[in-house]
Amino acid sequence: MDDVLGVNAKDTFMIPVKGDCMYPTLKNQAIVMVNRIQDFSGDGIYVFRFNNRLMVKRLQFSKTD
Image 1 (spheres, rainbow, N blue to C red):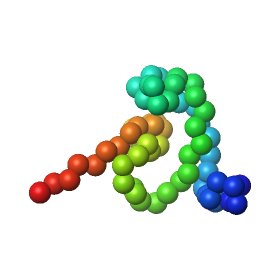
Image 2: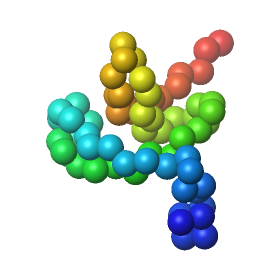
Image 3: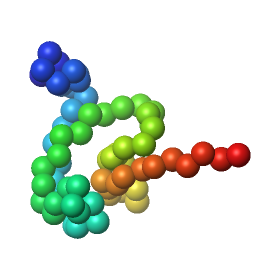
């Protein structure tokens, strides 16, 4: 998988999306492949743990003056 996708297979997993808050980007029950990272790398779609639940959300960082 490393050669094809450019990620380490040990740092990837697949989960189903539950709910429609990411529609139309991600549909309910869509299966997404997640690449585990240590730090946020900018705007994007992230999977994170909140209140002991995995959440899939789009994060967009705003610049502060």
